Length: 136
Image 1: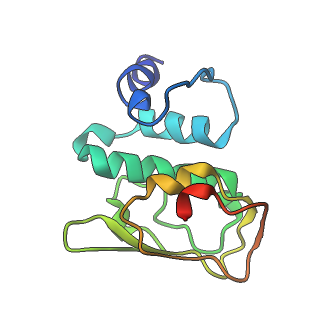
Image 2: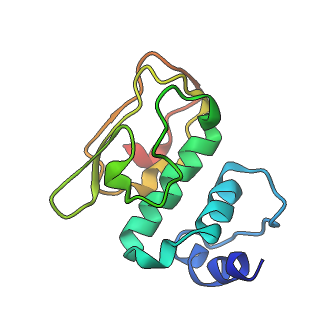
């Protein structure tokens, strides 16, 4: 709980003005925060922590436990080693290819936290709802 509260006080304000969720909340962004709080996230630069959080939120919002290709997700590896992620030479996500991966649900607004993303592919999945505004 201490690590969660530390991330809520020191990391979440970088992303949200208002974050009033309890550790027991099952929202995708809270699930992502619980995961971030349980690992070695402080070993990564803040930019990669933000990307890890955004990717974890996407995973939680689109039923990631049922994805066909997610073996390296939620691991201690850097995101450049995660399935479907292509990074630039600086180690920042540029391409996210989740095509034909059994995603279900709605893309969360946190996808817009992937500020260096140039391409996003999600064809042949069961994604519904509006495309988050931050992607435009």
